[in-house]
Length: 295
Image (cartoon, rainbow, N blue to C red; front, side):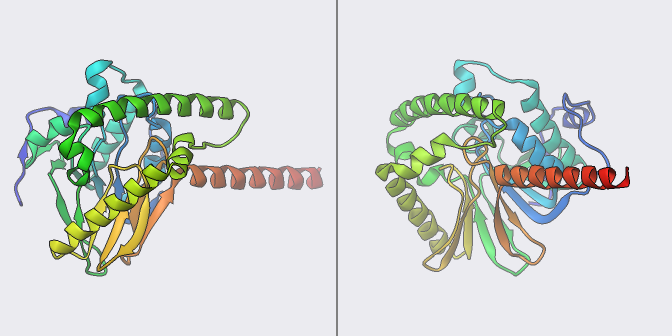
């Protein structure tokens, strides 16, 4: 689709406004060919918006895929929660599109209200149901959220809402745990991610989901698939297909990136921040030592 119909909202004006947390200037960003992020869940307390802002301020790309559940419409129907940091995430995405990055938004089940706008564009952000991405090394990847392969979502929608309520409770506990860790100067740690990998049923569900998605991608004749939905970042070969999941920004705080040569990588941003702070501490100590020697 060459020409995208624009939704009549002034997205350009929003992108030209001033964010609550200003974008840093003069910073050299890590450049990638493509970035995929999903399951941000803006509008919930579990969203790690500040960490995502840090990510967006340190990276850039030719193409950015938003692979669903960027906004949590399910939770916002029950209680409105939208702090300035959530607005700043949207601002950075819109600003990126205005600067020339191709931004493709593929709504998921939590932001399914935007699926009715498939084929339109909000500002320079394209809204699609799914997309085909060709990597630098010539592979064709199917990009979709993944809820269409979730048996619970398809057959028992009411159960999905019950599960969502339980998940929100776990996220609240996760937020409380990390608030205490920050007070003691400890890095981010995902309680929910640990629980998910310890529970046998959760592990089995993830494995089945990955295999079903990979099988569907193989049937469509593509080389690989990129999805989100299950909040579990992964890169592995399943049969004839390369399966990629970009994770989430509630539990794992991860993104999938494509390097200029087509190589794929999952970035664990909590680890990236911890490594950066450690390097800054070493540099500061080295500077203090040099000053002491010169005195």
